[in-house]
View (cartoon, helix red, strand yellow):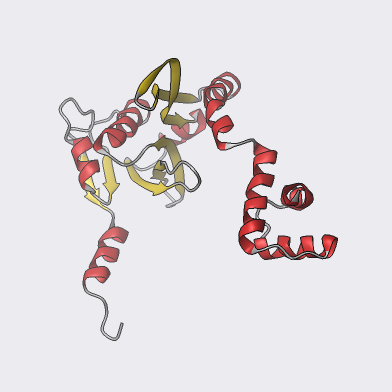
Length: 223
């Protein structure tokens, strides 16, 4: 009931804060729900707008098909794996594992960028805590261009190999490319894998990560 009540407000602005929604409900009903109850109501309202998490994942295959059909030159690569329930294989059923995608406009623009790519990953929030892996380039005016994306279960060497091998294949096959990263052990392992397409390339540290690690280890006096 609360989800239906706040649905118009959430539709108008999905970023509406929970305290604002609590005040909205109070004005309409004279009832003040707890923060937790109203937070749950907001999640249900968002599900009504966008369908549930499971439904969204089930539509990824169709989303990839639509991208490749209607966006000229778009590349998608979806990996699935067999589904299990209580250690029993569900025959004919596959679940999402990893996804790589990029747009032709980004690949065309990369030809006019510096011969370097910077890679990093970040957490995703929600029921399924996958990672978003990202590669960006930089043009002659130091403007940033995102060029490739992937959603993976984590940041293992296998996950990074999935992303980096496709990045190499579609964007930067030249031998003199420079890769900038935080040089995490899993990234290094992926680059050094036997048969990796990233041999004979230059790998450098990200200065922001160096500075962050340094100040974490040696904080300024007085802090």
